[in-house]
Length: 119
Image 1 (tube, rainbow, N blue to C red):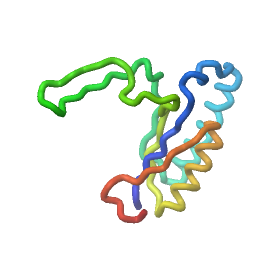
Image 2: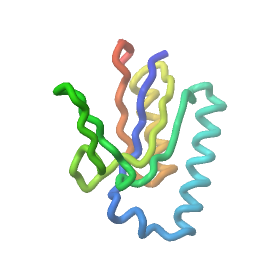
Image 3: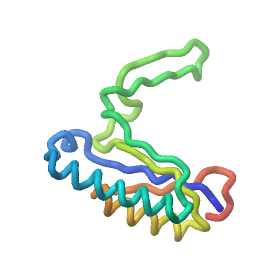
Protein backbone atom coordinates (compact mmCIF):
# COMPACT_ATOMS: atom_id res chain seq x y z
CA UNK A 1 0.00 0.00 0.00
CA UNK A 2 1.21 3.48 -0.87
CA UNK A 3 1.12 6.42 1.51
CA UNK A 4 -0.40 9.77 0.59
CA UNK A 5 -0.52 13.19 2.19
CA UNK A 6 -3.99 14.71 2.20
CA UNK A 7 -3.56 18.38 3.08
CA UNK A 8 -6.45 20.65 4.01
CA UNK A 9 -6.33 24.18 2.62
CA UNK A 10 -8.27 27.28 3.61
CA UNK A 11 -8.21 31.04 3.34
CA UNK A 12 -6.43 31.94 6.57
CA UNK A 13 -7.90 35.46 6.60
CA UNK A 14 -11.51 34.24 6.52
CA UNK A 15 -11.11 31.12 8.68
CA UNK A 16 -11.17 33.00 12.03
CA UNK A 17 -14.59 34.39 11.05
CA UNK A 18 -16.09 30.90 11.09
CA UNK A 19 -18.82 30.75 13.74
CA UNK A 20 -18.43 28.45 16.76
CA UNK A 21 -21.45 26.45 15.55
CA UNK A 22 -19.87 25.92 12.12
CA UNK A 23 -16.56 24.92 13.75
CA UNK A 24 -18.34 22.41 15.99
CA UNK A 25 -20.12 20.93 12.96
CA UNK A 26 -16.87 20.63 10.99
CA UNK A 27 -15.02 19.11 13.97
CA UNK A 28 -17.78 16.49 14.31
CA UNK A 29 -17.66 15.75 10.58
CA UNK A 30 -13.87 15.42 10.62
CA UNK A 31 -14.08 13.21 13.72
CA UNK A 32 -16.47 10.87 11.89
CA UNK A 33 -14.16 10.87 8.85
CA UNK A 34 -11.18 10.03 11.09
CA UNK A 35 -13.11 7.10 12.58
CA UNK A 36 -13.96 5.86 9.08
CA UNK A 37 -10.28 6.06 8.04
CA UNK A 38 -9.22 4.19 11.18
CA UNK A 39 -11.90 1.54 10.75
CA UNK A 40 -10.79 0.92 7.17
CA UNK A 41 -7.14 0.52 8.23
CA UNK A 42 -6.08 3.50 6.08
CA UNK A 43 -5.21 5.85 8.95
CA UNK A 44 -1.50 6.52 9.54
CA UNK A 45 -1.43 9.95 11.19
CA UNK A 46 -3.30 13.27 11.13
CA UNK A 47 -3.24 16.65 12.74
CA UNK A 48 -4.60 20.16 12.68
CA UNK A 49 -2.23 23.10 12.59
CA UNK A 50 -2.20 26.37 14.51
CA UNK A 51 -2.60 29.55 12.40
CA UNK A 52 0.23 30.66 10.12
CA UNK A 53 1.09 33.42 12.57
CA UNK A 54 2.69 30.70 14.74
CA UNK A 55 4.99 29.49 11.95
CA UNK A 56 8.77 29.78 12.08
CA UNK A 57 11.05 29.20 9.08
CA UNK A 58 14.57 27.79 9.48
CA UNK A 59 16.86 28.09 6.44
CA UNK A 60 20.29 26.49 6.78
CA UNK A 61 20.78 26.03 3.02
CA UNK A 62 23.67 28.49 2.92
CA UNK A 63 25.48 27.41 6.06
CA UNK A 64 24.55 29.38 9.17
CA UNK A 65 20.83 28.94 9.89
CA UNK A 66 18.56 31.93 9.46
CA UNK A 67 15.40 31.81 11.57
CA UNK A 68 12.45 34.03 10.70
CA UNK A 69 8.93 34.31 12.05
CA UNK A 70 5.89 33.77 9.90
CA UNK A 71 5.07 31.43 7.06
CA UNK A 72 7.54 30.55 4.31
CA UNK A 73 5.05 31.07 1.48
CA UNK A 74 3.23 34.35 1.09
CA UNK A 75 -0.20 33.32 -0.11
CA UNK A 76 -3.86 33.75 0.73
CA UNK A 77 -4.40 30.01 1.14
CA UNK A 78 -2.67 28.12 3.92
CA UNK A 79 -2.49 24.50 5.01
CA UNK A 80 -4.66 24.06 8.09
CA UNK A 81 -4.23 20.35 8.71
CA UNK A 82 -3.44 17.03 7.11
CA UNK A 83 -3.85 13.29 7.04
CA UNK A 84 -1.24 10.70 6.13
CA UNK A 85 -3.10 7.69 4.79
CA UNK A 86 -2.39 4.34 3.19
CA UNK A 87 -4.27 3.52 0.01
CA UNK A 88 -4.02 0.82 -2.63
CA UNK A 89 -3.68 3.43 -5.41
CA UNK A 90 -4.26 7.05 -6.33
CA UNK A 91 -7.94 6.48 -7.09
CA UNK A 92 -8.54 5.21 -3.56
CA UNK A 93 -6.58 8.15 -2.12
CA UNK A 94 -8.71 10.55 -4.18
CA UNK A 95 -11.88 8.98 -2.80
CA UNK A 96 -10.58 9.48 0.75
CA UNK A 97 -9.74 13.08 -0.17
CA UNK A 98 -13.29 13.61 -1.46
CA UNK A 99 -14.68 12.44 1.87
CA UNK A 100 -12.15 14.54 3.81
CA UNK A 101 -12.98 17.62 1.74
CA UNK A 102 -16.68 17.17 2.45
CA UNK A 103 -15.96 16.71 6.17
CA UNK A 104 -13.80 19.81 6.58
CA UNK A 105 -15.76 21.80 3.98
CA UNK A 106 -12.67 22.86 2.06
CA UNK A 107 -10.19 21.74 -0.57
CA UNK A 108 -7.90 18.79 0.07
CA UNK A 109 -4.70 18.29 -1.92
CA UNK A 110 -3.47 14.73 -2.51
CA UNK A 111 0.24 13.97 -2.90
CA UNK A 112 1.99 10.59 -2.91
CA UNK A 113 5.10 10.06 -0.85
CA UNK A 114 8.32 9.47 -2.76
CA UNK A 115 9.19 5.82 -3.20
CA UNK A 116 5.58 4.75 -3.54
CA UNK A 117 5.28 3.63 -7.15
CA UNK A 118 1.57 2.81 -7.02
CA UNK A 119 0.55 6.27 -8.21
